[in-house]
Length: 425
Image 1 (cartoon, rainbow, N blue to C red):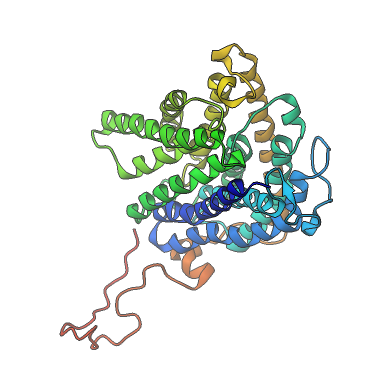
Image 2 (cartoon, helix red, strand yellow):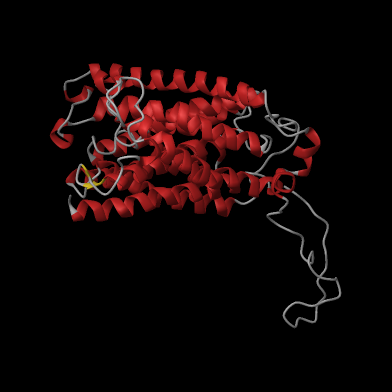
């Protein structure tokens, strides 16, 4: 047991946990005002249901046993997970750190089905999905499963987290269907400052996500920290120039999206590539995601917040470029194509495809089974009213004066409190 490693992993675990509320702000700002709370709750609720599911059974399915496909029940209900060492940190701390990854991966899927999926169906879906889809894929890559044996490398979750979530998001968007007013009305972000706040907090938390994946206060953690700073910076530069060339105006939402895409792309490579390679990787990753968003907007696919373009394309590009830019001199494990090992790109691609197909197929089955018990989506009238009221009985932005008579004043002001007409974006 190492005290420095333990201290760092305590901080890293807290940082990754913060990423789920950060995601709530990022997604919530992009939603319309009548759905802001519901959208944010789709992230926050994962902290509870997925967090408990992970402790009860998800962790043991991901990180126990020697089976190539799924773990055993040795650690079910956290049996045998105590303060003993797992590597150089307490076993239960390792479990908690990995649990924060499962929580945010499930929450990422919500971006594709906001503003129309029934909250009860969504909660059931992410809970089952975390156990049946996330845990096995985590086992394949990080638990000694078949992708690890194949030689696939994923430092902090390009395949396990982002490709996995994006494949599920694509299927969910198709199964649940598009919003009733999609394509017929303007659907705009209701609070862009929230989007920027969420992106900034995600970047902050991502240092725990990537550097924490070294599982030690080590030189590799330092490398992952630096690449996590530089890759999104490069994506932001390229994205801003693309925006400026295409529209003449770099946008705030574009800035926030670029940061997230860069973070997604560097995730599988963070502890394996040099800082200069991270800049190149981040710059390259901007192109497929940027044009992927433009292409999606011309289709009938209602991937509401472009989970597929940001996380699917970003994660795939990052996973493949890990096989290009990796340097054994830095990571001590393997080289990529630029350093004499071109076959690594094919191995990385196989891992992406394996995770993608299993996640997509499993998501389809889970949603269809849930749909046999409860409706997956809200009615047209419920969508029109907004899911904040329908699902939670609350409003993000109640009209001024809702709780007092119109002739009362506020804080001694001589001006009456008026109750204006409501207007949603």
